[in-house]
Length: 89
Length: 116
Length: 163
Image 1 (cartoon, each protein chain N blue to C red):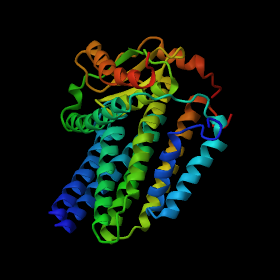
Image 2: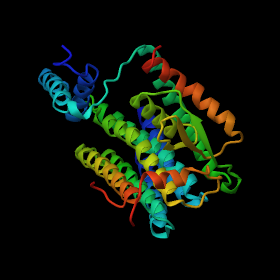
Image 3: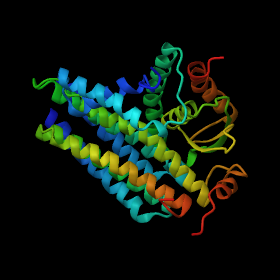
Image 4: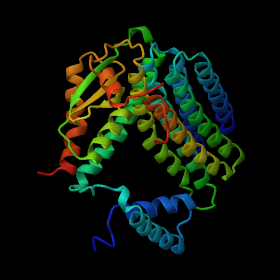
């Protein structure tokens, strides 16, 4: 039961990766691509949570936390760049 | 019983994640696309992480709540990045289906003079 | 007292975050968490220009419960809109006049608006009196602005600006 749900969930998250990857490539504008990157890193957290359950390992938690931190900082830095043309003022 | 609950949480989480990414592809303009990942994906990942916390807490090795930390962090940061993205889009005056309030884009430019 | 403990709410919050991070609740970790929660606000004092004053913890709890409930409802709604027919959407920009003045209250309001019913806060006017909100699907913009004010702003005013 749990294994079936996990397999389905892996498939769904993989589809999510492909869809946001398409938006990343298609654009058309810079904010669109940033939004796609934002979605991609959240998807990566989802994938890590699933992997953690699948392998019953808590190791992935630290990776998920780091991706959450770095992804957020990255999105903010890119948005700041679009707004200001510069990141560090 | 627990397994059913876990499976439901996992499926709902993955489903919402997928719907969020689908919205990213399907919705017509940037401002509407902005809604999909900030809402659907955040709840999707949130329920996946709750499932993970539940899974590790019931394996006999003590309560495991640190997934809650990632969830909290996501719920705090998602609105901030959405807000910043919306501001960047207004600044670049992206095409929108909704009528832009007349002075918004201009005011954004005045406040953040840029030499691109 | 004020000099030694500048942010009485931040200390326990940081301690809880520390306990979640190490994922253990032994007495030693509790003490370490409390020590960190005491030291970090003290050393970052200059980054906190205004001290938030909170009254009415019950109203705050009710506000948090409302937002959590709305997050789930909003997600189901957004999911339905995505799976439905995107060409039928009625996206709209709404200007919400603000009655709040404190920074913390305004950012909490903006965050609540972002997480809930199909709306994203897009821009705060420089005079801090208007918030531009983008709604995914709104039949009546006026009504939406009124609903946002009633549901989120009113409790926040009660908590942060008792007068």
